Length: 227
Image (cartoon, rainbow, N blue to C red):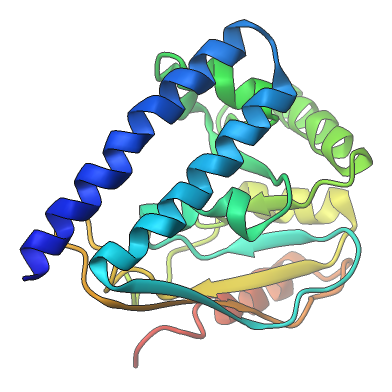
């Protein structure tokens, strides 16, 4: 039964995704950022509507702060990436530079306002990233990062990328750690039925030393890991 449910999910979600991706690429060439935002939001909601086909639901625990914040989200599966426009209101996410080489995706991502992270490009790249981040904050957009830089298996504490501490220092915003336990459920091939929890931890104030902020964020984003 689980295989049949997965097949139905893949057919529905990825069948619909073809249309959303084609529309996103089209409006990116037409330079229509508002239309692109509607498409991305709709794609995320489409994913959420398809999850019951595999018996998966998403719940949120904890409490989000009011006002601008810097969200550090645990990354265990593709689910939280596609869900970002559903979880947050017009998020300004940070994505590694390699993703911008994907035909069509890079152009659409830039128009949406995804911020490119070039890890080895030096001070000029960091200044450019900060300029884009501050522009997003001026629009009232939440800043969202996967601080480990890539997907990490459930139960594993991945090291934080150095860019996280640099952004934390420069933004001077509270960090809201978000723990996720999607890994055991939203597996790469056969998804399992169950509940994916996103837990919003207590905001961590700005101005802490690098060792302290990294340790606190690591603890908080891994609070849903199994012992």
